[in-house]
Length: 466
Image 1: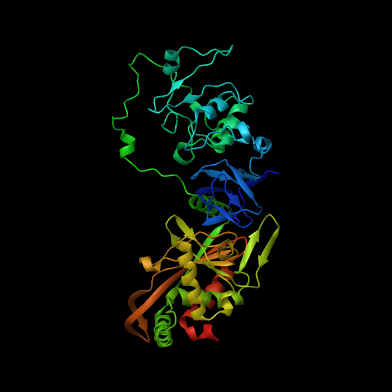
Image 2 (image 1 turned 180 degrees about the vertical axis):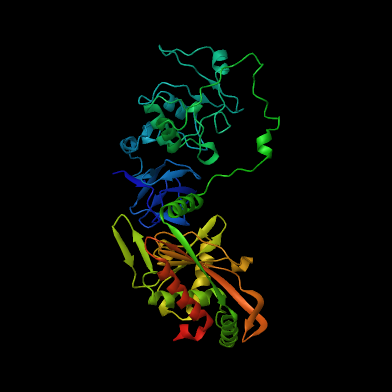
C-alpha cells in the first residue's frame, strides 16, 4: 500500500519548509527512522525521518523548493507499485507506472512534457518544449487537435520565468492554474529561482495581482532589449529570496509590535560591582579550569532571581485562551544573532542553576544556534527574553517583545565615565537596561519594581548567589 509522506510541522511557528537537500533517491529502500531529507524551517535545518518501511517510489518536489505544511513530499510503497491514485489525491495526474506527470525541476523528458500537455484535468493551454540547444518552439493546438505550422509556433514562444524555455511551477500551482483557466505564462513566480508556487496563484485569484497577458510579437519597433544589453535595475541592488527564518521573524515581530501595546522603562546601573565580581569569579574559574563568565551570564542569573520575586513579569497574555499566565518556572530566552536573523535558545529553570552551568549552557546553545542545529525543545518555552547589544558598543536601545512573553530586557554596553561618590568625582562604570513591557500584562509600577530588584542584584552581586 502506497504511503504518502507530507511536509510535517517541525517547529511551533512553522508554516512551510524548504527541502534543502535530499538524502535518499527514488528506488532506495528505507526503514522507519531513516532520514530522507534536510528541511529548512524558520528556526533551523532539521532531519526529515520516515515512520514506515518501504521503497521510495516518487519524489514530487525538488531541492530548494518551498513546501507548505501538509503538502506531499514523497510516496513510499512496494517496488513497482502503482501510485497514481495517491498522486491524484494530491492533485497530481498519474503517468505511466504511477509517475507524476509534473516534470521535475531539473529534469524533464519529452514524454513528461506531452503528459502535461494532454492532461485531461487541465484547462487547454500552450506548453513550451525545450530541445538540446535550448531554442524551444511552441506547438499551438487547435480545437480539432491539429498542430499549427512550426513558424507560427515559434512566433508564439514565450520565455518562461526559469529562463530556460519552460515554465517552472509547483504541482499544486499548476493544478490551481488549470482549474481557474490561468495561463502560467503570464504569472510571475515568487518561489526559488522564479518558480510559480501556490501563493502566486492565490494572489491572482484574490485580485491582488493580475496575470500579465502574453506580449504580441511586433514589427521590431518595440522588441525587448537583447540579453547582452545591461539592465539598469540589476546594477542597483542584489536580490535574494526571503529565508524561512526571516519570514517568521517578520511575521512574529510585526504581530508583536502592532498587537502588544509596548512601553519602555530604562534604568542606569552602577556596573562597577558587577565587573569586580566577574573578575574575581573568572580568576577562580581559571584555577578550576571551568568556563569563564560573561557579563551576560551574570545578567541572566540576576534576571532569573528577580523574576522569581516578580511573577507578574514572568508571564504571557494569551488572547485566544482568554487568560494571563504567570509561570512558576523561570525559562530565560537569550537572543543570539545568526546569519539570517535571531534565534532565542532557552536556559530552562535558570533561577536554580549556578553561574558556571548557565555559562556553559549558553555557549553550547549559542554555538548550535549559529550552526542551525537547535532542536525545538532548545528554543521553545521561554517565559522572559534578554537581548544584549553591548558587545557592539550600543549603549541603549529598545527591543520588540518576543511573543508570547510579556517582557524583554535590552542590555547596553558597560561604559566608563566619571561619577560622583561621596561628593567627589571618580572613575565609574555604568550600564543601561531597558525593559520593554506588554501593557496588557505589566503595568508601569510592576515593571519598575522588577527593574529595581534587578538593579539591586547587579549592584550587589552576592545577593544573586544566596
